[in-house]
Length: 410
Image (tube, rainbow, N blue to C red; front, side):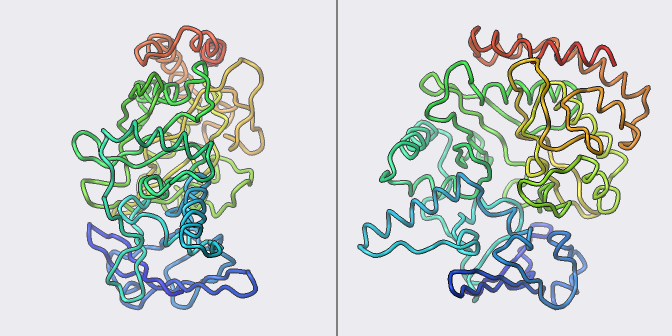
């Protein structure tokens, strides 16, 4: 299979190169080459660090060494949808289901909602893959999409075509879909799992975290919480779009050339920002502040795919923070990505120990910690304003109160 790859630069789709897939004996290999015209373009940039601007081909088993493509293809939820859709279509057509390889997943993602500014086209460049026949559903479709997500989780024969169109481009394991908000902005709707208890109320707690982060001076995406049949659905505005213009996106994992499941540190991302960042003096201290907040609320799912970067004309900038969730209890917790060199404890004291590596003085770090403790002291009010039940608030109390105490003692 041959695919044309374009990337939007200043809103224009610029042909970047060609991607070739080869499958032999059930094993997939892929190769990508930049076009000469792209290499000569004044706004050209490397799509990811493992694909530097140069002539010749980059080779990979699957797409794991072509990380720019991994960032715009589905993670677990979207992959499951695409495989289910292929299985159901094969049953309808009375044929064997095809094996979907990495490039098939890449080409199967809905073009309109694909992450970032990379777009995938047929070899003739006439049609972007995969086109949507109905467009992105509106916000009023959230109830229907939630019901379909619930059904998909419990019925292997459920029709998932609507979910594929709306949700196959999105990463992560939890059910979600792309929708158009009230004013037409492209948004992510994050749904509760079908078996999630009212005490967990994960989407509502994520909304609380985002609100508190914003009050602490951390950049977050615009968000709203919807109550749908008594359950929480979180609506997040896509930050890789400015109107209809696509903004190049790079995950933290791709930036540091890491692999899923690997153990990394925020300091790996600091190194990338120092070399490739457009504003390291702003973004590196901001990253430290996010790490401090993460430690304070026990956000243990802070792996490098949950860090992101956006491209501007001068380089890469931190994206707004996302996927930040508190975890119950005041026991010792451990981060997916450490703040320091090898200490993965989710404890604000670890942030203080390494603050100067993030261009933050110890004195400034203590001041930020005190200010953050003050912001977090409003956590119950924020939870109540989002309709979180008293039982859920009580279950989360020790998490927030212990985090506030640790911030105050720095």
